[in-house]
Amino acid sequence: MNKQQIIKAVAEKTDMPRKDIAKVFSSIFETILECLEKEESVRLMDFGSLTVKTYKPRKGYNPSSKIVVQLPERKAIRFKLAKRAALKNLK
Image (cartoon, rainbow, N blue to C red; front, side, top):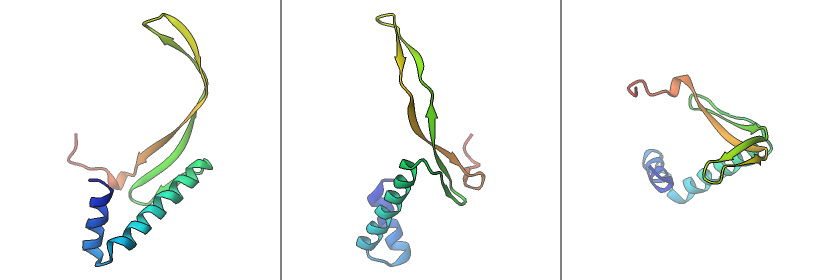
């Protein structure tokens, strides 16, 4: 399901115009990204949480050239699914 499909589904469930839902949808994700840029965690009840994890610098190896290189520190967004949101039928 993509963004437009989500907006359409919410519009059908709420009887609100798609234009308004699109604004709200965009605002929610902009706010989440702003929080993550400040390295604040975002918790969505019964869905999951988003955090920023910092990885330390490390040595990497290029197998084709057999050169060891120093990889810089990096940050990544991590998502942890809430227990209540887990799909029990998936194994």
